[in-house]
Length: 183
Image (cartoon, rainbow, N blue to C red; front, side, top):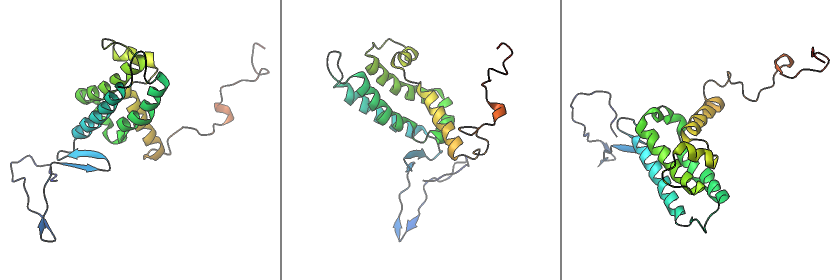
């Protein structure tokens, strides 16, 4: 894959040989499970990720009917253990692209599909109401949480993090009854 910052029209096909055999040039590359294209965008990754999750949800929906099928607890377990990790994989890398409306819409559609099956609701119910009914956090908030958790645990600002640290006595909120003015 050829990566360049130049915008000039140059020959984009290069002939590179390895052990006297030509290497084929590709326009996208999968590296550590994240698909990148020659412009280093995440578009292909989000498309393949949402397609994979949608196929999984549609396969599950064959067994979920109103009178029989998987119950709420089983569907929620499948969502939290199978679909959510697929959606959140690599979130610290592509968190900035979620601000783009088209990417956010694709990811929200996947959560909407599972929310409709969990709530056994009609297609006309809004996504926000579906999240309230099912008790699931909206996916854009989950993505931000995953990226923040990564920054806190493995990021460069590890020293600044005030998560799960012992606090001194002066920072605690409780008061003794003896020191309270009313009693």
